[in-house]
Image 1 (tube, one colour):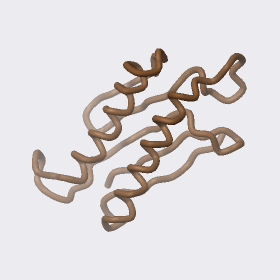
Image 2 (cartoon, helix red, strand yellow):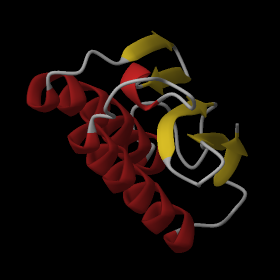
Image 3 (cartoon, one colour):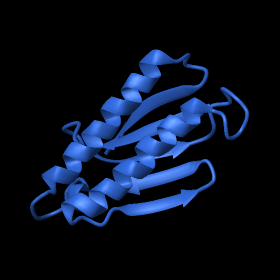
Image 4 (spheres, helix red, strand yellow):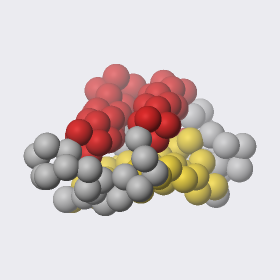
Length: 114
């Protein structure tokens, strides 16, 4: 099962996400759910860096991707990068769409508030 944890502040504003696991929908290399989630997660991190001037904190290994945007951390002083937040909200929308279209035994999304 893929678990997607969204990191949100007390106001519900997203500042990162953590993707773990494998869907187990099909054999490795043919699992369209894993592929879709991977593309969303990696593309969002790459887009934040390429399009917003923000360097996200990224940790990636097989079946595990953690992405956080430092300027969006709760309690962080200075102006938040709203372009980065828009891309994170787009990621959330994409994951929500996948969750709505497939059985919950393959993917779940949760929110961790700080």
